[in-house]
Length: 601
Image 1 (cartoon, rainbow, N blue to C red):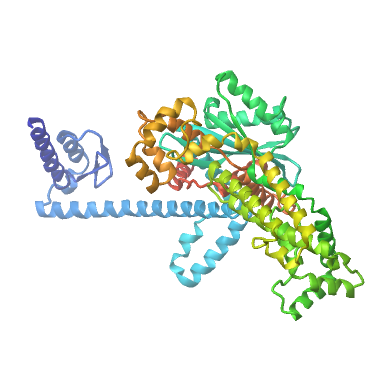
Image 2: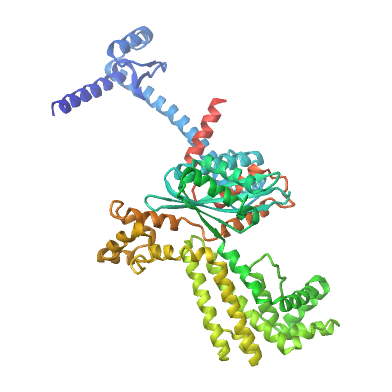
């Protein structure tokens, strides 16, 4: 108490002393220093002797004859003048910072939308024209916003570096992380390796970001890919012993048993921790698409593709076919190409050909290019079956493409689809075609039904065969997604006791039903459920697919196209990081760094 009283006394004396500066010595305080109101001289040591000496030496002759009221009036005027000057500089500084921040914000949007850097100049023209019409008095402020091509390029580089720094800071808190890897070539035939990172913290906060885009000018062997992945992890400060799993699209240079990337990664982890085993997964969406090969529908797809190409390849044919559809007021205004790379296109093309089969037949006959298969009952029934099956697979594909899905959610969707195949297969044998409406419309015979039922069974077997890597994790995924209903006997020995404690706690069971999975596990006490939390982190951090890589390759090919082929690898990497990131750039830090650069020149 005595110390507080002493401090208050000193503070009061200082306030009284400071009030005398202005009236007696014509001084004021700025940032802890006494500043003369007349000449602007700063006095570092705030003592009466120092202030008095400066006043006596410099200004006493001019102000010694003033009365106290006149001195107070002069000091107030000088103080107001100083504050006005300070306000002018502050306003100029604030205006400049706003212009720089605006430049960063617009550059960020340019990169997010995959626009050319030179579009910044066009945007500035639009801004100036708009402000001239709406608020002409503000035009000077907008003139200061720099959006030249070179400036936007520098801003994009700065933003990408800021996002990478934030990701590195987050990565320091990861308990576990996993990678999704895919490789493709850009328009200049440079191999681009995309490395996506998903990490989880002790508080079960999940971060999913583009770790790096590594450009490879030479070979792309497993050893080359490992070198790039290792460099990426070192740059972000990630430790190999925290790596939980890797998901790829199954390319040989990634999955080779002897010299593939995954083999090198497992060897690296084994050097650090001999008992640690990585989880390697083949993209579930890629496998789902490959499964349709066993249906052997080439005789349907080839005829459909040939027919569509006949209509679309020649401009006259295409125009006349569109006119025919308009005359008949058809729901489909056109017919599209099928691209084998686009996973969802086959079902849509087959469906449109089915719906327009009569119009297509009439049009092709008139052109002397009849399609006899459209009059063949067996082929038409096969077409109807293909339409329904590909539609079912497309539904699964769309579900698996949803952003933010955990691996157990994706596998659950695949298992549900396999059960549907079993149900439909048994129903087709009994001529119950409720779930195959297009095939029902084709009125198949008994031989058709037997064949289609067998094809569905083959498709089910192919799904089961291809998803063995996910099947191996099924017990682990069930334990994490349904800890209160899973079998304790199927759980690993280190977590069985904790599972029993968990399943016996009614309060935790009620809490599990009311919150998300991440929130539930983050609420479990570390001292009570350490192994269960550890298992949950390892499962929840895994990638179920590489679809995020496929999406990013689409962005890459849009940014580095034949019209923009001169985009450098560094700038392409910066754009992809900005376009895919969920992290918000720290614009305040960017503006401050820019100010320091300007002041240093």
